[in-house]
Amino acid sequence: MKGKSENSDKYLINARWSLGFGKKYFFVFLVGRDKRLEKIPQIDDRRQHSNIGKAIVYTGILAWVLAGTFVLSFTVAYIVKSRLGIDLVKGRSPFPEFLKKIGVCH
Image 1: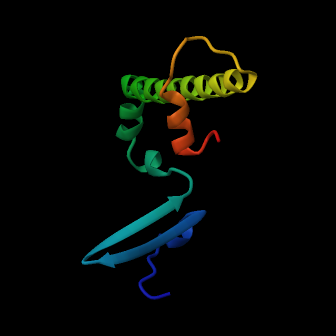
Image 2: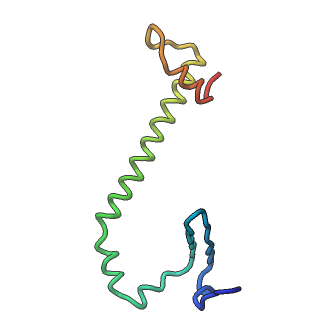
Image 3: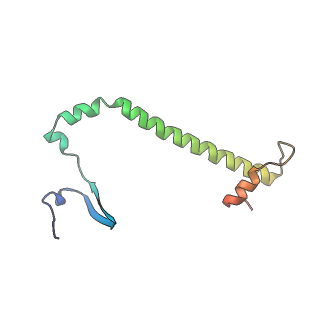
């Protein structure tokens, strides 16, 4: 392989490619054991003190999961209610047209 580096066989997965659309972009996907801690112990110290960053990321993930669960639950409940013919509010609702437009209902 042309241009193969000496580190390329140290990874379980080592995928490198480039795309050129006007500008050239280089992509790398590596999977392997993290050996940086053996060489630079300061990285481990920074990782231990980043609990606030982890909390923010986990809170964001939780918010997205809860929002998705709410939307999915509301949509399923509405479809079941509509199939059973239960009207909770008198008059016309814009929600059926929206569900037809996105292809969820007929």
